[in-house]
Amino acid sequence: MAKNPLEEAEALFRRRRWADLISLLEPLTAVYRESARFSVLLGCAYLHREDTGGAYSCFRRAQSLDYRDVDAALGLAAVHIRRGESDKAVQQYIDVIERHPRDRRAKRGLGLLRKTASGGDEAVPARRLRSLYPRPRRRWGVVAAVAAAAAAMTLAALAWPSIAGAIRDAKPQRDGVAAFSLSAEEAAAPVGSDGEFDIVMTEREALEAFEKAKRLFSDYRDEAALVELNRLLVSNATRQVKAKATALAQYVREPSFLSMPDRYSYAEVAAFPRLYDGVGVVWKGLPANIASSGSSTSFDLLVGYHDRKRLEGIVPVKMAFESRLLPDRPIEVLARVRTQGKAFYLECLAIHEQ
Image (cartoon, rainbow, N blue to C red):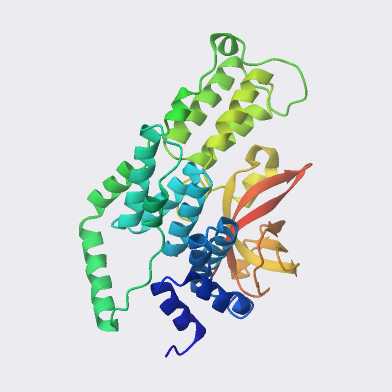
């Protein structure tokens, strides 16, 4: 007999009794609100019952509690595929492979998306997609688990060069980015003097910014690419060039704690917020003035004050999900910068408690 509801839930998960799993867990949401595994189990049940909205909320909640949770990432990838958001699914699989290079489901997911795209198909077959869903945990003994972890660490240290190469190879080519280009007419006169602008660019600077953004996207440096596109959008570039920049910005992936090679500080953003609109950031600090409405949370982040030594600044944070934060507990926030007039706030995507 199960000793607690989570053990019973794991048993129901193994027996694929989705309706019973939902009936067991839904009334306990308030009790297990801080359990990532609880959110994953409920999300899996929703996913198998074709409730992608409920599944998405649960998997996002699990990631906010533990951004390293592989099952949460795999579940989110499946939701994105069901929604036709292949780019976001690819990002989740890449994040898993970066942390666990041998994960077969993530590799199969990438391969399946590549095959589907190359074959011109828009949808992934439901039967094959279900094979990529999170699976019940194996009940290994403690000794076996420790031995496996030690062996994996040793192998990873010895084989890191080849693993790094495999990770790079796993990233799909972003062919759509290369296809974006300015017409001969747009390239001949990329700047003008119409409208308001904060940055004055020469023709050469405007063309270089556009091409640099494309190169950065190809290198999966999305945040740096978005900065270059924003530079065009707040400049004296023509409306046609700005329209191309706006369209190119649609290739920006969902940021994660592990896939952001370019990170911008509070001082950089505060100096020119419009240049970083929509850009992902990861900032540490302490939460203050915490307010929760049941389905959302807002607070002020005391940036840089996680060690109580130096306060870099204070920025409002808005979350589309509920989170129980403590004002004296340091956090690391993954968010997108959003401008509001001359000020800015953070649209929080995930939180990692320090």
